[in-house]
Image 1 (cartoon, one colour):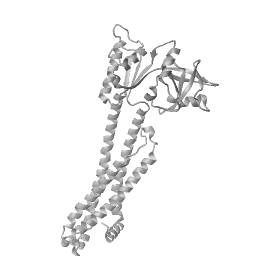
Image 2: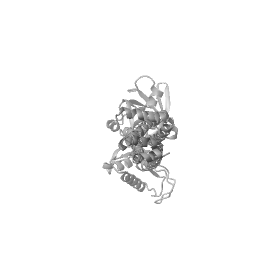
Image 3: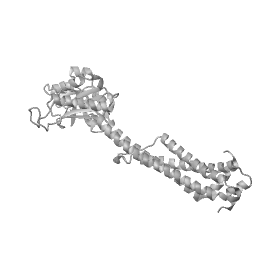
Image 4: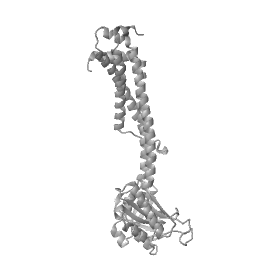
Amino acid sequence: MFDLDRWREIFESIRSNILRTILSGFTVALGLYIFIVLFGIGSGLQNAFTEGFARDATNLITIFTRKTTIAYGGLQSDRQIVLKNDDYEQITSQDTEKIESSTPRYSANMTVKYGRESGNYQISGANPEEQIIENRDLTEGRYLSPLDMKRMQNVAVIGRMVQRDLIKNGSPIGKDLDINGTMFKVVGVFSDDGGDFDERMITVPITTLQQLKKGSDTVNTIFITYNPAMKPADAIKYGEQLEKELKSKHKVSPDDENGIVVRNNAKNMGETFQFLFIITLIVGFIGMGTLLAGIIGISNIMVYIVKERTQEIGVRKAIGAKPSSIVGLIMQESIVITVVSGLIGVGLGILTLTLIDDSLEKYFIVDPSVGWGIVIVAFTSLVISGLIAGFVPAYRASRIKPIEALRSE
């Protein structure tokens, strides 16, 4: 392996047969290049879907209402179903082991003023667990507290864009906002991966907002995150149970898909990951096909190389070269070509993914990349294949008698 004369011989053989070497290496490099780019794009698709779910809790169940479309229980259709505090309390007081966090929400668009600045923003009444459900990060101050809820405090947590629009300079903590004629003290600022839209929201205690609405006990939406330890099938079943109970309570037909709506991320994610699984299978199938093409290509070329060097092998045997020496020389040359070409293919593949970066984001491909584990497995597979591709024809050639080898054309 470390015989200097053998290495000189290998490099001389490569130098004397540039076209043959390029063809051999091109097959290997192209196979790895296409394999890496395809897997990178598949990874980018997975990243795009994961990012879409990351805006809110992935184990989220959202409950809201619309008008009924089916007459039921002696009541006409086209009724507006309204959720109330007791609906939220009923849901959260039973099956507590299935619930990770929850919050009711009452939302309304209101005029907000600070000094000479003003704007129309969505004001959400919620409880402290909204921060977990919405995946909000505090940049300053604090979020709502149970004490705020109990005392119906006039406090507000504002989105980053609200701060930029209204307060502009300095820390907003402790500043007073005029929300629809009522003063609220800013206690915190949050950022949200949902972007500018979600960061133009203001959250206040739902108890306070309901009190301002003349003691109303209505809620627009109920958010629940189910226990992450639950299996997807159990989470889906739990969501269906909630829907059935609420429809029964509000006299909504079980067949009415409009009156009470329960959106369960367990169901959405199941469908999404099925789609991703199919994409991964397709990408993997094409990638493995590309690798297989590279293996077949290097095998065919090595057969040709050995056949072309049959007379040379005969001369070597005639002057006393051992079969093992002949096999080792050809295998070593095969490994050198495969390793160098493979490294070129890997380098070009990773460079291509780096250049693509997020330029294909509009096609739902985000941060395309491939793990080093997959790269190493693919690279090792090709090197081993190159080794086998060189060994088989070299071993056969080494068994030929010198006189027969010298007579071959």
